Length: 350
Ligand code: SF4
Image (cartoon, rainbow, N blue to C red; front, top):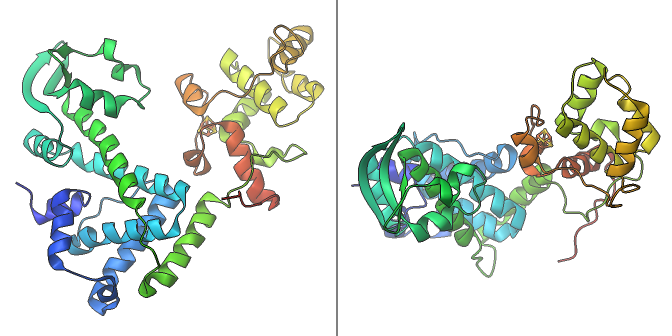
């Protein structure tokens, strides 16, 4: 059912692991010139994951593609950085999703039932405008959809038939992405006792990449003085829109005020920023800013909404590379201000 090209596309499959085992290669043999491409690709896989959050789907060199995957995992387990492991697992699973969604249903069913041991049945059912290719057992569906936020993954929005949930082909691929992520995380957590000699410099380089792209782990601290240059794109966009006299909706205004108050901006300065708004009322604005700052009403100081909420409300604007590594505009601000000031990079205690 699976060709070598498939193993190159899906190197997390048990068949790919078997293929590597049968070659009987030791780590030391990777130093041979003919395996130079494997080590290169293994490092590139890591750098792509850390820098872009996505591993490229190029499978032109099948052997290097199959062999480099376990090598990347080994390097990561030797680096021992939880943030890097998670980022790599996510990037590889996104790559898998991009390829899986193009496969025919037979191949998806095969991978789902063999590698993932899903209970899955083929369907050929059209309900409304949706065409369902599969029915997936409820536990398999729930295990893999639990972290997916879109309403379509909520069980009340699904077709459920005798313990099986109907899914489209694309949805099956998306759920497989989750399964791939979990599998890779499990795999990269197993660390050998010592760093093989050949990989010493590779592991050091990988540690450098982690610092370069994810930063030094620090305590959760904000700079004492607000740093306008460290503001995330969404907040800068709200400020620009207000300056240009454009209408900013409630969620945008709430985000701006809560963000600024949380990074230590004074209430007067926050109020001033809203002045260019066409419907500006100083009294109302001051009241609302004080309310968000916890001086009025229930006296709760509000924090800035999460990026997922801001995306839903159309407040997220041109997210950049840092945005891929954070979940809240305040975390963006912390990450960027660290880079800009080079301050406070204290390592977290192990
Ligand atoms: S990802 Fe988050 S921080 Fe970045 S622009 Fe979107 S909402 Fe703002």
